[in-house]
Image (cartoon, rainbow, N blue to C red; front, top):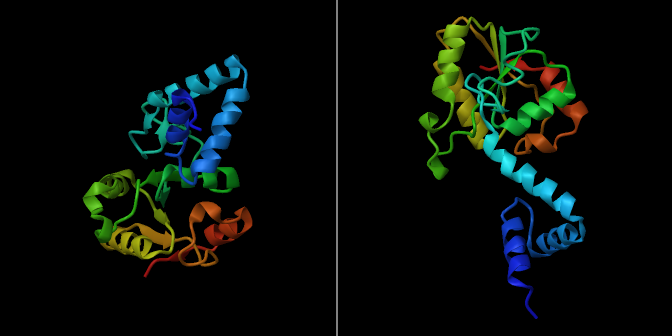
Length: 198
């Protein structure tokens, strides 16, 4: 027995989400079917409103405006810059609540196997930002994978002639681990005990 076409299409769309297989997509679809019309319309509006989001013109974080709320916050330390792989990591650090500097989102990592080169990422904008911005420290908060190590080494090499201290979040995060699955205490310890990249 087949589902009605509308429901089948919804299930197929839900399967595009990471970690959502056939059964989970079916469960989500039936859950939406059981919601009130108002709840479904609210959900649809939220999805449509994603089109209003853009990348911050300074740090590449997600925002509704030209400049995100972090970059426009004058109380933050604009001398310390934390470099992260993606926008999810910014949110992770912000939930931790201890880092009061600014961020730079790379939107990926260097990966020759996947044909992702430095110029495909926000590395050129990072280097220009650091050189022009008077930063005193750049913290590399990038996962310890081959791609992460390659990206960190590349950034360190580009900044070696600057007067900027380049550090990396400390050990404690297992090699190969996804940074967004680390518990907050381990993440905070790694962040507080960061070391200069050599």
